[in-house]
Image (cartoon, rainbow, N blue to C red; front, side, top):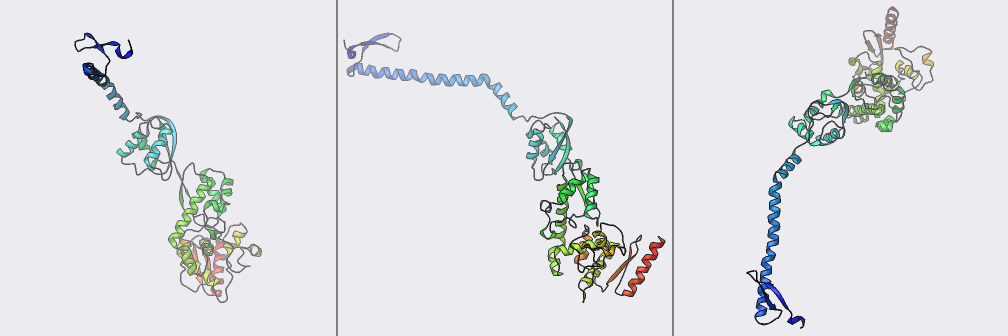
Length: 387
């Protein structure tokens, strides 16, 4: 018997077995087609059973799936006020999301999402201020938001008055911040790092703007001095320093030098415009006169006082304006805004001389007469002797 004549068993609809022949013709062929159709109906049951099993699995695990989804959507957060202490810095330009990640990394909040939500709920997402803050470990996000109030920033205020020489400014900064003086001195020598204007010639004297500053614990001396230079730039921009200096026929550096002398020589803000006028009248006179300012002489000698002695006037310092014509090489102090404005807008007048006749009360007298100048000088000497 060959393969084509071999009998085989097929399953009938009633489950009985019958014999058939593998042939491509006659009723056997029809039976073969019926067998294929019956196999197709049987094959359909498998995917149906798979769907039923799958649906059954989902039904059995539905509760657990819901619980998982619920937990996944719940934001993790600590409760309470936390413990310990950690200093967190918010940097300029950071968003609430940036701050949230920082807090999570430092162990303050359990999740960044919790803080973002708490900040939004407190309407503080857009009002977080740069600075350093003291927080606690493992505290609720809502509690952390409250401690990021700008009024709770770690800071100290440093006030530097107008007219301080740079050496005294650095000493005051070291004293008020507790940072080493040598670090301020080293930072002051790097004019490029401080952002000094090109006309400052790399010298900080005159450009460490006097004001009250907020100093954070992490600020280094270079950061503090840079903030002072930045404040100078703001003031110079407001006053139109470069434009106004050009209109006066001077460089911005010369104006700052004049402003520093005005600051040092004036007994009051009201006198500043007049002192500035005396300086211009001497510089621009026909012929020009020497400035003869005691403040510049004393600066060159690193001395203090309102009047130079005859010995002081023998100084060969470039700041000896009794011996040299024109302005000294640069500012002799750090002037404030009033002095800068006076240098840019001197009071009208023909004065050539002035004398602070009463240093205690800050009384300064101005004149265009040399004879009257000597009378004022005698008055000053009398007050000093009686003082």
